[in-house]
Length: 272
Image (cartoon, rainbow, N blue to C red):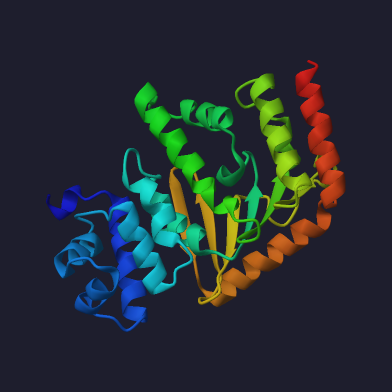
């Protein structure tokens, strides 16, 4: 396989492995001895030409002390990968200790139900085939495995009220989606805040935004538009985005009031 045919997801995976290995002060040969893999196989993984088996990925996580990044991200190397512009952000998402999301018009991917995600993918152009849509939904839901840990990453979700009111997929899909968000919030796994329409303009209105924090690296920001996405890591820019998020959070309803609103809108969808 030539480099031009290597899926971006595998390139990002291999680059992350190389960075982690070098940060640990290991050569490919030394790493191969510790994870019981050939040096050649590790070289192929780092180049994106091969993917590790699940047991290999778990050993890489153990030796490189990643917190499970390589095992969790493994499913995205098959089928339809995440969008090209989201490749690196998806890896960062797997490593983050805290994530703060802002949904301007849509529920963020980490909280989407299967039916909601399917409706979102079906709305794009050019239209997806049934198989491509199924693969995309599976990949999106697989990202949510990071929430299986009861604590890490801490997840805060700031939603514009428009996210609640836009009937993506129809009333039944929206009712299920909002019940899911409310349930995650009630269990304490996610902190939810809604910015009501009455606030008008707020500090983070312009685009979907994700702020991420890490144990061993500076924080970053990911901003996304139509078929585009950018990782921002300049300290000044990151600080400004954090401040904008904090200002918007100050305009939002409290967690409990937000959950009450989410449940109330779900009931509206359920009862027509």
